[in-house]
Length: 107
Image (tube, rainbow, N blue to C red; front, side, top):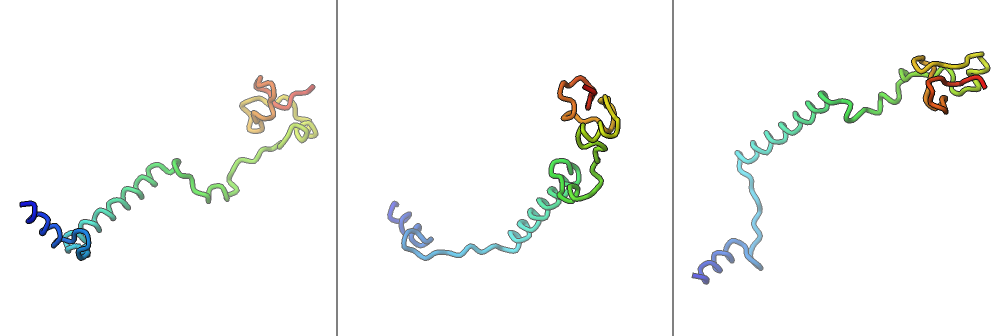
């Protein structure tokens, strides 16, 4: 019995035997193509449903990003602007060192 198993194994390309080429039939080719198309469709759908997950670089290149009217407190003070409240468009947290809700305070 073991001899028959060994001979069958050698015929199928065991150690030192012929190497067989993997041949895909037409059904296998169709299945692989369908699987590939499904994965592409899922990837495109997820990209459109959740664009925030991977923001594009083109957004960073546009000029629609908010511009601070006063880049630092020295510019605000030169324009006679003091005590910018937290709800203002000119307020930034880095210009409020004591975190009390007023940026560029008069000292």
